Image 1 (cartoon, rainbow, N blue to C red):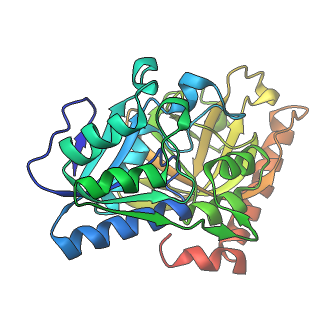
Image 2 (cartoon, rainbow, N blue to C red):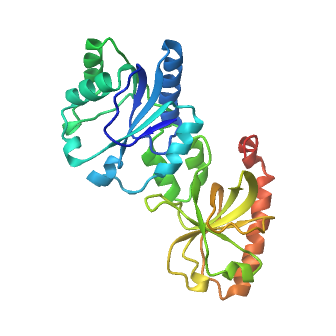
Image 3 (cartoon, one colour):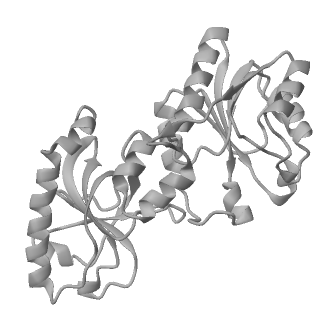
Amino acid sequence: MEHITNQEISQNRPTAVTLGNFDGIHLGHRALIDITKRSAQKYNLKSVVFSFSPHPMFLFGNRKNLALILSIDEKKQLLEELGIDIYVEYPFTSDFASTDPEDFAADIIFEKMKCRVLVVGYDYHFGKGARGDYELLKSVGQRYGAQVIRVPSVDLYGERVSSTRIREALVNHDIKLANDLLTEPYFVYGRVSEGRRIGRRMNFPTANIIPDVKKLLPADGVYATKTVVKGTVYLSMTNVGTNPTVNGSTRTVETNIFGFSGNIYGEYIKTYFFEYLRGEKKFSGVEELSQRLEKDKINTKNYFLSDDFKKWSHKY
């Protein structure tokens, strides 16, 4: 997959483009991407996901939970797995935000990108004052002989699927809903750093994952997870929080990987979150904490034997 992160986007081959922010690559985003890929295949075009960096919410500060469901690296990984030919992260600045919508559509999408099929969500707006919409894109596209497809809203459990809804689910311990909206388990990908080794002394060694600083983490607590280390998937349980029992002060992601004992400091691992087990608690000391961790381990194993996990078991 070609990854473009600057304004040098001109193409020498016609493309099918889907346009948006795509944070989370959720159920609705996947509908857009699927139509884009099928259009590219039908008309012999390059498939393109055209996004922006940084996410506009960081410029405008117009989101309640100001963080990314997927880090830049995580989004790139997923789009590559989905078989996209070109992923554009167009630089988003104050000057660019004031671009006339028609100029953006004509100059960047239809001319430079050589777009012949453009796919957008039913309520997509863009450009100065958010005046750009489907009707404008359709009008401009006609001048270039391009087809513009508007994809209807995708609903789940009676409400529209959106990145905002996923963020709210994550910060409210509703990992099950977040995963259903995402169509695959929420995950944290990051490098393993050396910690204080307190868990090792309790026979619960943990991999301390350093996520992207803009990554939205789930609410503090203990979760049943699976962790991928060097291509192998392990059962695991993961604590998100400050570890108050041992006087922690920094919010961390610490994963106890069942049946793994190797040294992975400096390695990158991926931890998938499936079930919220309990909130983070300050125990009387490490002995009480250790006893609680034993129960958490049993609860984690029981979850992965339960009917709740069956819908994920074919892949994870």
